[in-house]
Length: 124
Image 1: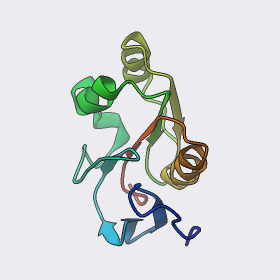
Image 2: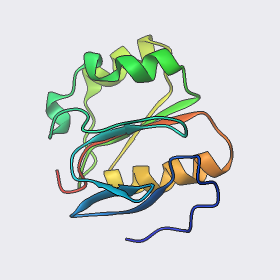
Image 3: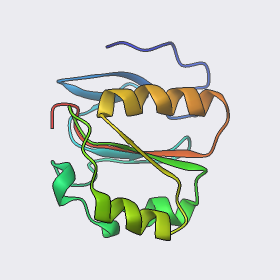
């Protein structure tokens, strides 16, 4: 699915996502990504949500965003122990499938919110 045109070339807006990966600033990422307005880590994380660990989120925790979006692949998956650990680390966490997380990330970014998205591959 193609998303809207990026207005600010200095921010990491998600342009498209799908079975081929996630397109950010003209570069396709076929593996997981950890992204905020200013920085991007790719590849990031495991291929599946059930193998995520708190250590995968060290950089996100250090950034102290207003919200952390966790995109768990093609389907929404709730890693309960991980969510509890992230909340204990003072992070507001929202879990959704990766396509919804990409859309929500762009909306929050447009609102100038401090957001970090942890996105597993859309087809995971």
